[in-house]
Image (cartoon, rainbow, N blue to C red; front, side, top):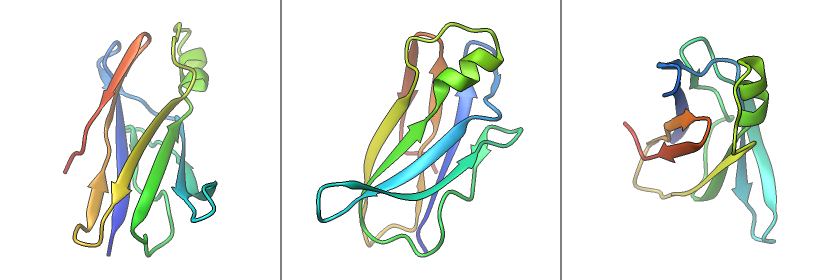
Length: 112
C-alpha cells in the first residue's frame, strides 16, 4: 500500500518541528488541487497519517504552514508557507518527504 509521510526538522533550533499544520492535496484531472488529508506534526516533527488509504498515482502537493510555527517560537520567517510538489507512481509504496526548515530557507528531498 502506498503511503505518504513527512518529517520537519527546524535546523535553526536543532530540533524537530512539532505542531506544524500540514495539508496534502492531489492534482485532479480538472487541473484543480483536491484536498486529500491534513494533520499536525507530532512531538518528533512527524506526520504519519496524512491521508486515507489507498493513495492513487498522480501529482501531489504538501503544504506546510510555517508562519504559524514561527509565531509559536517567536522567530522571523521569510516563507509563511512551504509547498512541495511531487509525483506518486505505481511502482513505489512509500513516499517520505522530509523538510529541513530555518527562518530564511528550507530544503527537501525524497527520504526513506
